[in-house]
Image (cartoon, rainbow, N blue to C red; front, side):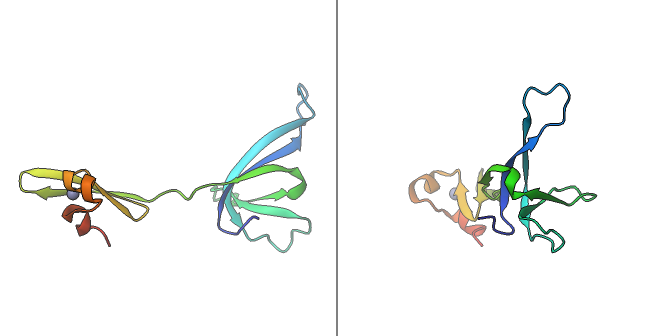
Length: 119
Ligand SMILES: [Zn+2]
């Protein structure tokens, strides 16, 4: 369920320690990449990257987890301009798929501008 390397958002329910709390529990959401659980962790848990170099890993006990969402990988987008005669076209590559704003591309889903950057 928690595959290592996948980007997830995990919602947890934790006991609230605030004095003026309105409920005994509070909900906290963490997001990061699932990491291999370190061997010193002797209870069922998920290890999540934090993106903070001084505190790179957060260990979330399974019993606190209310829900989780696997997030789409951030898409890689590249943009290029292609000069053709007196016109400039915008070619974009999104997750390996090519797009161009020329008329030919609207009809054929490919064109010579996008072919330049296909690979
Ligand atoms: Zn084109």
